[in-house]
Length: 200
Image 1: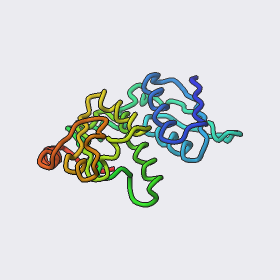
Image 2: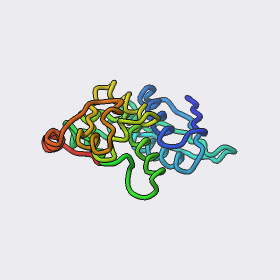
Image 3: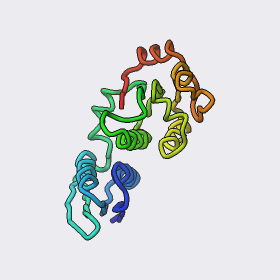
Image 4: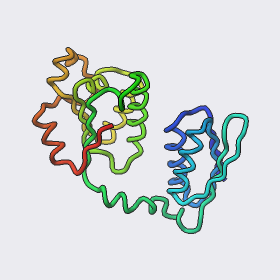
C-alpha cells in the first residue's frame, strides 16, 4: 500500500498528486491523508471516478482515506472518463479575460485562477492556446505562483498569447514576461476555430 500525506496542502494539490499516483501504480491500494473537508471530498470523488472504493477515517490532522481498487476498473484508470475524452476531443482554447476566476473577492479570485492553471497542467490533452485579454494580461506580466504555472504550460507546448492593445492600454507591453503578443483578429480567429473555448 502506498502512503501519501497531503495534510499540509490545500486543494487542488491532494487531488492532482493522488491522481498521479493512481495512474503510476494501477491496481495498488493507497492511504491518503488530507487536512480538510475539501481534500476529503475531492479525493473521494476522484477515487470513485477512477474505480476505487474510498473509506474515510478522522485523525488529528484531518482525514485519512484508504483507496481500494475495485475489480478490473483500476487496470484502466482512465476508462471511466473515456466517453468524455472522446466527446471533447480536439483543440481547445482557454480565454482569460481577467486575472481572477469568477467574481467576488479579488484576492480569492486570483487564488482560484492559480489553482485553475495548476490543475490545467494535469489535463490531457492540454489546450493549444491560452489567450490573455483586458486585466488577464496581468498574469503574463507579473511573476509569482501563477507565472510559475504558465512557465510549465509553455514548456509543455501551450501557446500563451497576450492582447497587444490591452498591454498598451495598461502600459505593460515592456513588462511582458512570458508568451507573445497577439491581436484581436487572431484572438477571434482562434476562438472561432477551436473545438471549445474554456473561460475560467
